[in-house]
Image (cartoon, rainbow, N blue to C red; front, side, top):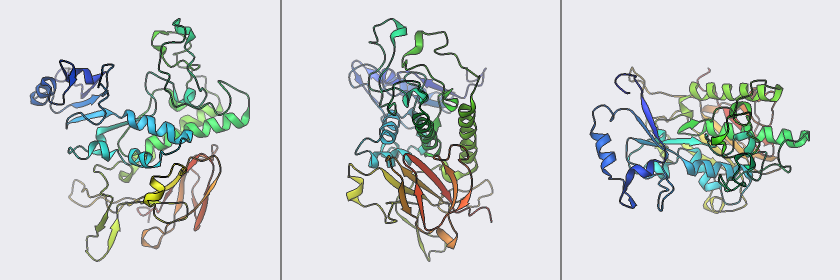
Length: 377
């Protein structure tokens, strides 16, 4: 397939099974050794679904160098954070920045993490914000099939509703998930149809259905068209800025500038009051709002001509609480001003640009992305 059909990679379903020797999962299994030594397969993309149904089969972060993984920990954390669960802030920060705790220490890069919120099985993104429970009766297994652990939230009503307040909150929450996914370091994986709010009516195990439950409905109403445009523009934004898809993990420490005269940080975390986050906040169950600074001058990569690559710096303001939160903005580098790039609260015009002052209110359950537009001058 690689040499004749030019397939450039493979995704291995239940890949932990391939690493089993007798009953144990081993990273040094003969299967991995064979692939890494094969001159044809060693250079293709290898993506693992890093779990199976056996004991000890959950192996996220445990596959060898050269392998990327479906990051199930990313999925669970992002769902819980935006649902408003307590104690998610520290883990959310790890997932947002490429899951270095899982992939950095064995020499892998951020692209080892295949980030996702939904996949081909389980709830669609629309159903994730519309149902608290699975509804698999159509599968004729007494609703026993499919996972019960969905980390979903229906916003106060189970299934479709005509309540405009609930529908607006659901649309905003879908945008929060998509924006978080596309703006995270690592590789975003979007399940087909999530970009237009496809629903399976709460069925989270539709493998046996070949009907309206699983078919794509392309008769889009205005809100679904808006969501598709929103997703498309987010993807374009990510592709346009190397700072949003770094090749290396953040060092999370001060870095001396090229001249050696100043010290800058490649990444920084801020509380809404403008102070950097301390250990007391990271470990607090109540904290659901945070700002992430991404320094566009510290990418530490060069272009084809050998020149350092630089980009805009970004400030991501995230608020998973139900009320609006006022953020005091840290000053951007170089004396410029922050400009709004994305606002998930504004469902009609989420990409309207405006210059920010020293403070900004981020609406309940929404995020804003700000830029110093350093490359625009």
